Length: 264
Image 1 (cartoon, helix red, strand yellow):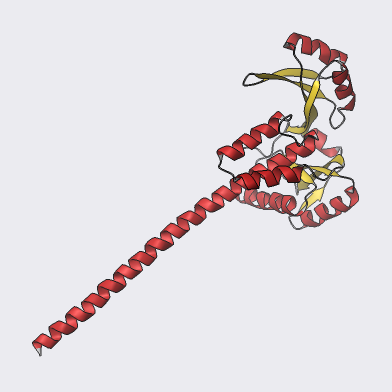
Image 2: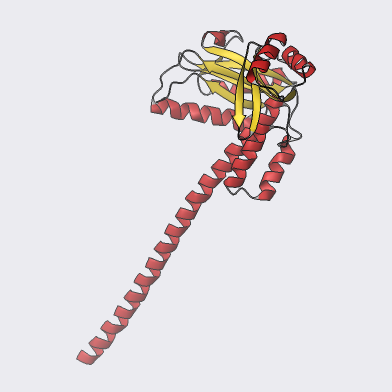
């Protein structure tokens, strides 16, 4: 009887050990899977961010060629550094060659008495796009403002990035001739560019004059720089980020959203 009990004990002991090993292996596999999932999610987020930035640069500058658009070339370099698959990168560059064309519009929106968002849109169907933005905004207690309303909180300007074999002094003289508001020198490695400040959303005259003066226009950038910021809580910021994500994911005509939220 005692011998039988010993056999039974050893038998169930072996089963318990095997089950313990099996569950330990299962747990290890789950941990590896969870870690890989986190890594893949982070990698995907980086790729999506870079893809969106490439689209913005191509739309704002009107130049989807990284060979002649330094800002786009920099984003391509970042994508390669982040190990973005070549097929994915080529697909993104192919898509932005056919980005939706149209006129640039600005739509200011405010959440109650909180921060103001300046939505940059490129479209030839503004009424339709505006309707969709208003529909989403209502769900987040946001209201569209008059086009001129945001000027109290932002300094809006369009920058023209151009190149020419000259120094800053010569570029400053050319800026006066071209009726640009200001100019600054930009160094990018061994390359030198000039950033001319022009009238917001209407850089055409400055661009024409600069081309007549021998400049190569590389890109244009519309920027709304906040002059008065608003504080928000972490909870409010979470809701704001959801709002932005909803807009940019559902309305492809939006190229970027700027705001006057103060840093937490």
